[in-house]
Length: 223
Image 1: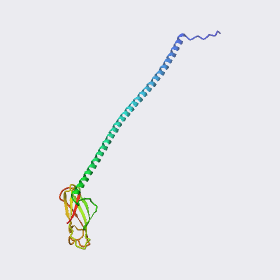
Image 2: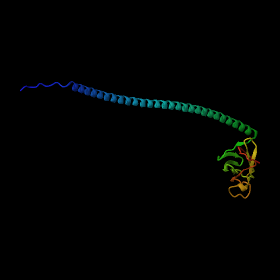
Image 3: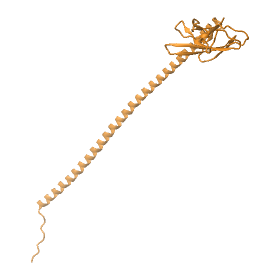
Image 4: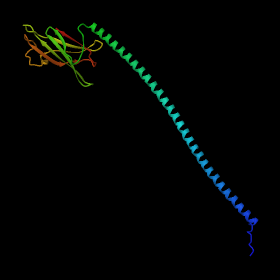
């Protein structure tokens, strides 16, 4: 029996196999290129988004810096203005105080015996039978009362007939009110205006003002 040798494949079959191989290679290559392009696109998109974010942050930081600089400049300008106003106010206050002192010295020098009116403070007089006096401001802002409390003491062995008059003056030295002590103003029962030997008596009352102005000084006379 004769053995038959294998026949070589036909030429057409080889050609078709080669074409299929080339098509498969091109398909794989195209898929690889497409994936690379997608990755590259994604990377570029990420870079673009990050760039936009960085730009937005940079612009925001710049605007914030400019705004803070403006606020800081405004703050320092206002502080400088406030310090200037405070200095002007201090200078004005010192000037007013100086003028008030000069005016007080002038008024006190023009009227002998005139004293500065102080409230809720006992002022020692110790002149003849008048020991001390104190003043109290009562009432409201629109209706003020100027009350006094005076202590009289007779240290002698003789009967004394007190004659005490309280005068109030404004800041210009103009008399604006007066009150005369009498037994009706005594805090204890008094049968007469006279002070008996070794008698001590206190008086309370109110000085009625003739002018609607604030008293600054007082004067006490003893006839």
